[in-house]
Image (cartoon, rainbow, N blue to C red; front, side, top):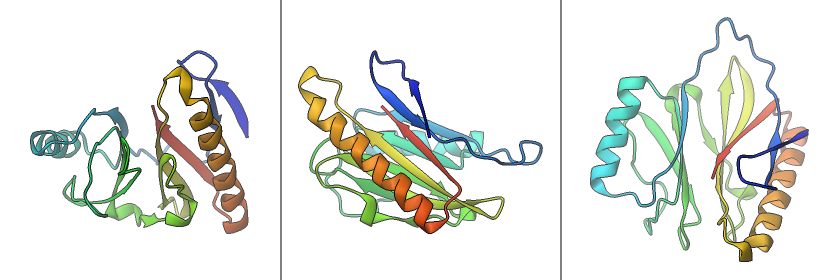
Length: 167
């Protein structure tokens, strides 16, 4: 596991490189902080993903109180977490055989996990949000700790890689 610097000063990001055949694997993915998921935004996202053939959509600050799962994008399975705060979602095209991994989630932080199959290899995906306020040091610490637990889960479950989308 490697640490690289994010665009936000002093925020480390875990980066776990996947060894996939780049000649044949092309999976369009998108991450957006949407600051609220209205009916209009859902329609716009559905059209956006359809037009660009997006297979993975990670959203932050969805601000939803709905029970899981919520229908955001046609043809995708959507999983949500952190609904008591700002919330995150992860929508994955059903052809990638997504499986929600709720046991990795912590109700105190905004992160949602799902495993997928890419070139017949299991990969863990996550959508995360950490409030950038100065007072959120504890939140960042909890988030990083949670990601380390997810890495350990990957090793035990023989998951070959981990992609974390977030803001």
